[in-house]
Picture 1 (cartoon, protein in one colour):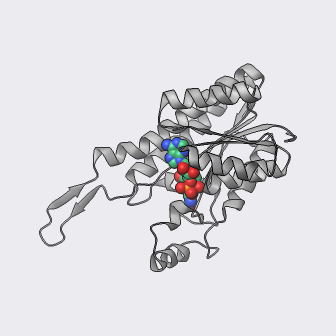
Picture 2 (cartoon, rainbow, N blue to C red):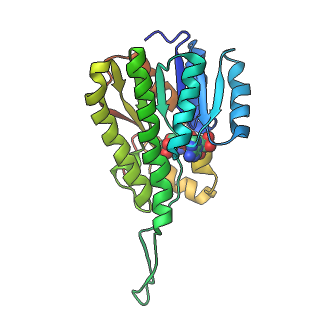
Length: 255
Ligand code: NAD
């Protein structure tokens, strides 16, 4: 796909990996459109992205809300007429063990709450379902496109992440099944499962010791750069053979 003046929409596009993706696509001449949680984040992203393309835009959208997602995608369509690439990237972490057990007594001290489970499922799985559904509906009517859901290597099951791992495994399944359902509408679907990437999500609660521990688990000895994930999204958008797969872009980390 020649990306010149193609419309690229990214959920969670005002920060971290999402913003890096929009900048990468804009560098190839695409029109970047960010969807993100707050007007402040959207204003900042729009300001940055308009330096790269005059038609760049940003819309507030909570991917966990059907009403908000529908309105945001309608606004995108009214503004641009179509969407060529949709990256389903918005995501959150809320880690915790399924059970916390007192080592001395063997008694269960705490459980992962339903609210903690649901918060992550709502954003990371339902959010991908809702935004993927709306992007696909526009693409079907406008002649095709590419959908790139963002999973994680945690989809294989990472201790301390029942909610996050389950959501990301669901995202990987949606990627493969949407590629089957949507191919007849000229829509490709291929995802990315990043490993550990240096963004606010990973760095904000991590001290140096924890960071060093994580790095020691990554064969290349460092975290990924958001730009490297953005390059992978660009590759997927441009290469028609990539379909129905989730690419692990992780420096070789195994979970
Ligand atoms: P980040 O926290 O830096 O950025 C996430 C963005 O999503 C923010 O701009 C935030 O405002 C937005 N967002 C959060 N909730 C939202 C909602 N309900 N609706 C709309 N936008 C919302 O995170 P990141 O590291 O850039 O992560 C991006 C994606 O990559 C996520 O899906 C994450 O699970 C995935 N991922 C990240 C890593 C990593 O190591 N950073 C690893 C694997 C997968």
